[in-house]
Figure (spheres, rainbow, N blue to C red):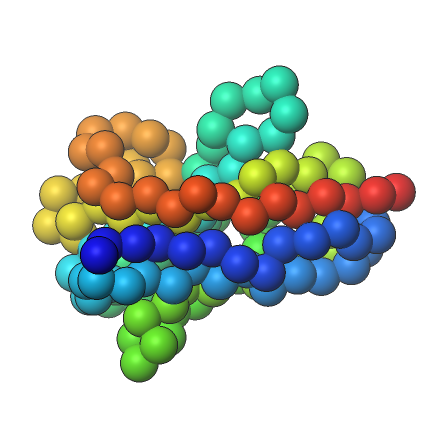
Length: 130
């Protein structure tokens, strides 16, 4: 069964850190662009960070640069999102999705331009209190 399962969310205070995980099963993340997206209450979904598995090239939304770090562990078939210095505006459901690497770029996937994700996870809640 093909699945993407996110974990690692929680309730933290402003300034805290979390590491989110996106674990794939039923397929390998090789040859995909993996994106982390978030949707805050009452807002649309936005791509925050994306990574291409073929060369580990990355893209970050301007608002998260310097605080978010995306990484991949091919042995665990998992992509991580390290979030530091959390802010109240980071409160959202965070989910991961994948697009075939040959059909797009990390920036395009995060910007929601072009190819649509072929698999998506259900998401993990991040709540930041001030």
